[in-house]
Image 1 (tube, rainbow, N blue to C red):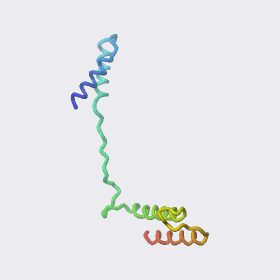
Image 2: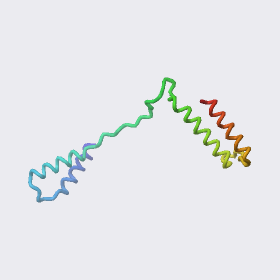
Image 3: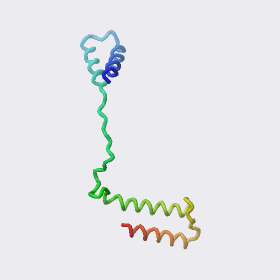
Image 4: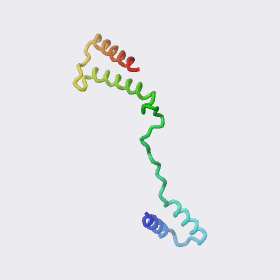
Length: 107
């Protein structure tokens, strides 16, 4: 890692124009050396700080239930995943009511 940093700084220093006065050259080399330092990586954590004691947030379960209900309505309306397609207005109204009732029971 140190060799990579050193090689990177050397490459950039060798590309500097030769007509710089010594003070400017030192300032530019300082900028190059600081800019070439490896950046601190932010560690991404899979831990969700909003979790509660049981491992699930209070908003997660209702959100998943609502998402499942919407996905099921879409599947029945389009016939996806081998679902029996809703064809008549009565089928649609009854199906949506059943899915909504199940969703309310989950919450």
